[in-house]
Image 1 (cartoon, rainbow, N blue to C red):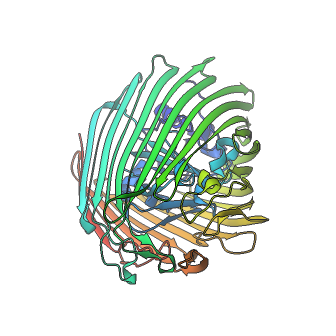
Image 2 (image 1 turned 60 degrees about the horizontal axis):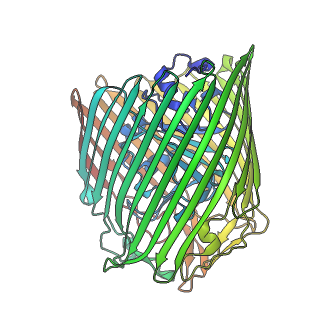
Image 3 (image 1 turned 120 degrees about the vertical axis):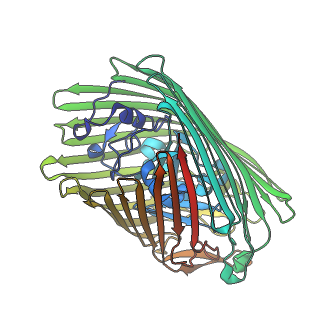
Length: 638
């Protein structure tokens, strides 16, 4: 594949560039570790390779090295440090974990894993991050702002793009084991190899924990709620020629979570319930580049299934939810160079079938919906300084009126001062979910008259290099409005009249004050109100994070400090008849520490302390969270 390497990153390796080209319809991942605020080349922002200085949208990347330095076990914990991202977990490890970008709802964020859309049709078209372990993750890109013009209905708030590792080089085996507080034990192992003609990567990881009570202990709930997770992933690719590839990727997760019930105004209470489930995801993809690599064609087929069984204290299945998503897609990219201008034309067609099945003692549900999307984008680069993009998407849906969304971005680079100015504007559509339309419990009725939510939003910001390349600061102001916001009343869902308004700003800082010492910080202020002026729940007004990492003893040792601040937020409290009122959740600060030391080549000892100061807090009303915890482990590489 022949791709023009953008200006400031011509020295990036071809392997790193090739890895970044995969998303949104591929499972590639770069094998080179690069620590920057933005990736050298990203596909998430424009569906085509785009250098950091050419990206007009707000984008943050988390690398594999950062995950290992923090010793991240659940990927959602690393996402807490991303500007504009709020994470809410209903208890300890394994419980429902929602992610909201810039105040948008959880089901307004599209989540991709190796090019596979994993939003669950049987869970309100939302992805639950509870069971996503981080051991096989190569990189994560978080794209903020309305992205429906590129990605469709679920991308009103933004996109989280997760890429797992790929095999490269000589055969290599890695393994790690750890144990610690709350009766927790975890392990992972992987094998990878690859050449310019093929690559292979296999991974297995798992965790078991006795846990703590899901219902807050301060409410008199002493028992422990355990968690089990086993995850297998694999990917392989063959390249018959220099400009063609056939790739497959798969992911399987099996989990069980002890949970506590919810009884009206009493909130979460101990009752011995549990949830068990399985997740299957797979994709096959073909790629070929013609005209000396300037005309690229990508075709793929994906399928995902997520099943959850809810059980009572006697382990009897009381209800089952089964969500299935099948998608076929084709994308073509044409790159043209003419003097001082670069042109990239992109066209794509996607057809998706979503199905949700529910079985319980009080209801039976089996619904499906199909949609077809047509995407077009033009990317123009001028004089190696100005990059403009315009994209439009038309969606035809089985249930709703056809929708057209669009987006435009601009990025201007001032090389002499190391400044990038950027801005974007986009529209979005979020269709009602199957459960919102048809209901799914004895106490929650569907509303088939719901209309799609419609969004429009803009952001403007800058990225500024300081102190040569040893420091950078970035800032973004964002404003988003959503019309016909869908909200639950406790018994059904309705469209709110008028516009909901979300605005705020994001700040980021990265500094390397001395060799091997890196300091990163972020701050987000968000003001979100519905059309009545009421504060949107579970959206903290203030979020902040600080990460300090130091490598020493000739890089044999590493120390990492992480601080996360979650400001005051609100939540819903329900009475026994499911009428609701707003309650406030107190702010909290969590401090985590991690360290590692290489005992010899390929053998590393590591340990961490989470919630160092034993902070007691709630992310969701009446649901507890773990206190201070310590873990110790060993990592091998052969």
